[in-house]
Length: 273
Ligand SMILES: [Zn+2]
Ligand SMILES: [Zn+2]
Ligand SMILES: [Zn+2]
Image 1 (tube, protein in one colour):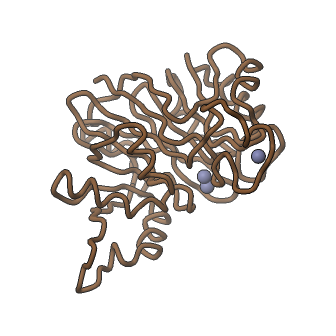
Image 2 (tube, rainbow, N blue to C red):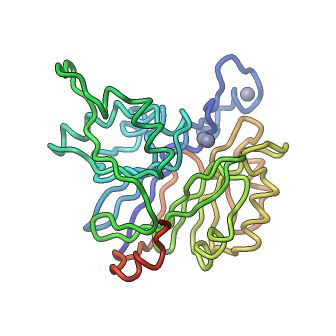
């Protein structure tokens, strides 16, 4: 099945430009140097439209990139930049007329229930409305509307979080260390979006050179770096990257082949519990 991937946000948690920063990248006129908080949208042809994370900037991202449908939401982890657009899910509930299935690992699901208690433990009087999500805990491979999704366990500092592989394409952000499982799950991936914060070391994110080492090991046909801070000017950084590697930018769109739903035996093969 073919799918169209849109990078909704390619920035780190502060976004670029950062509030009050006068550096060259924050003042750049290149639209690719304007980075909102990290998220992607995967629209499967004749299948579901899948949103990865509800970034702080979800409303403006949906308006900017014509996103009018979300059939499922996958959460990588519960850091603020990845979840704080939750309330904007209400528009998709209204347009589509129902709750939206959402998927997160156990820790992230717990954080979401606590952070958004008004969503998951709703008050009696609903006022202006609340987002409607049917939250499931990820316990290994799962299927969304005929598409097979393989969670990719990686480390974000000390914290285990998830990337996701959809057939030939994978999205791994907020990572500074692969797990053994991640290497085998990502083997043979054709297009990879990978987090690469900046050149200087960081305790919870890959640098550009660390991300390039992952690319070198996995050898995807095309890699895009995301979750980028204001240290990296788009044009100059891209010019220095090897062939087949580029910085992502907000609004970047490309087509991929996603995998059909896993059979029950394939789900059982990669069950975590
Ligand atoms: Zn982040
Ligand atoms: Zn700056
Ligand atoms: Zn994070």
